[in-house]
Amino acid sequence: MRALADALYARGYTVSVPQLAGHCGTFDDLRKTCWRDWARSAENALLDLEKRCATIIVGGLSAGAILSLYLASQHPLLVNAIALYAPTLWLSGWAIPWYARIFRLVHMRSFANLIPFPDLPTHGIKDPEIRDKVQSAILSGDSAIAGTASTPGSSVLEHRRLVNSVLRRLNVITQPTLIIHSREDDYAGPDNAAYLIRHLRSEVETLTLNDSYHIITSDRQLPRVIEKSLEFFARISCENAEAYQPPCITRAPTAD
Image: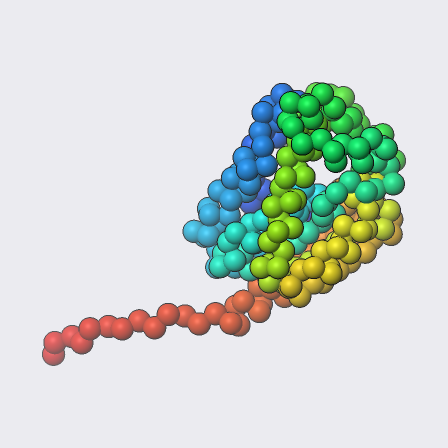
């Protein structure tokens, strides 16, 4: 998310990119956490922004997009808009292995942890040069750069539990929403975006990419992602500024 965050910051926005619980550490660090831990990390960042910002737009990539929907449903008075990048309700991309469908029958963490999910050979990146850099980062062992070489099965299960929680609350999400998704997404097929467009009650603005895979915030069409995001953020900021009414201040009369 760094390139998008830097672009927003350069335009004068206050940007918060929280590290989620269990992330940027080891395989075991991630395995020990659940979706509520991830949501708490995002929620803490939201409450911190509330102290500094009059308008707040939450957004994220993949599972981060689902966490953004969760925040919007839980804090409708704090979240003014949502930006969803390759939102992943389920794994339906063209590169997902066959056993991912069978994994939907798994409901216990202990059993889920017996089935790790190796990172796909594509790494969610279409551009071969960028993909090689991602692969080198993964092999370096520094998960803060590109994640771990595989995802614990329990994390995939927890992601499903997060999704189920959000799906039950889609009808209460009314904030303006931007959805950017790739037609060639190797992890989460376009059906993910289509489902949200049909079921969200909010005004939805979309951009469909035709030359990227899943990690659209790092792939070939990153400039287009940034451009569309800046347009959306500027419109939301402008609309909220126009709607804002400063509070009336009553002063006590002073003696002559």
